[in-house]
Length: 119
Length: 110
Image (cartoon, rainbow over all chains, first blue to last red; front, side, top):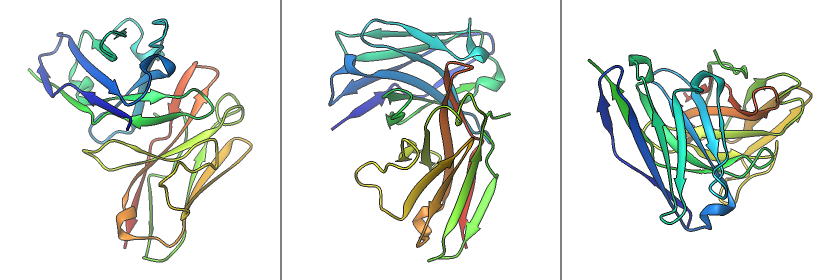
């Protein structure tokens, strides 16, 4: 069965960086994109960006361009998200999800990784 | 502020039918399909509807979706207590070249 297993919770100080990983199994990793979405406390879902595991192409949401980097390692079927220059407002649960494209959407999601930014 | 507009809350009693709306623009809902998710905080979001009205296997037929122009809606019939959750619509946006979400609707089963 399709599974996306994310790394654990992280605590960072403002200005620091964080890296969240996402290991895929149960399907061919390079066949579908991976999107990253977050949910901050009291807020809705927000898309950060997308990566093609096949060729490493990326797209980033305007709000995060320059602060986020998405990478992938096809040898381990793992996607990663780096978020830099953290602020208190970046405290959120970060999800990776399998992205089937604009028509079929995002289907399977990881369990989420809580990132807490606190001084 | 979310790109797609949803009512912040909805409610119904067990057995009732409730509808949640989602409004967008030409560059997102007007051009692309709509997907709906059910989300309980602390869990992974669950895909309920894709391509406007298609249900993934395992999703009960109590859940249905529709789209007209730049708006879409999710209907839940035979409401059950387990349906109490947050519901999100999403669509691909040709203007931002990525996914846009609604702000979410908190459904309460009275």
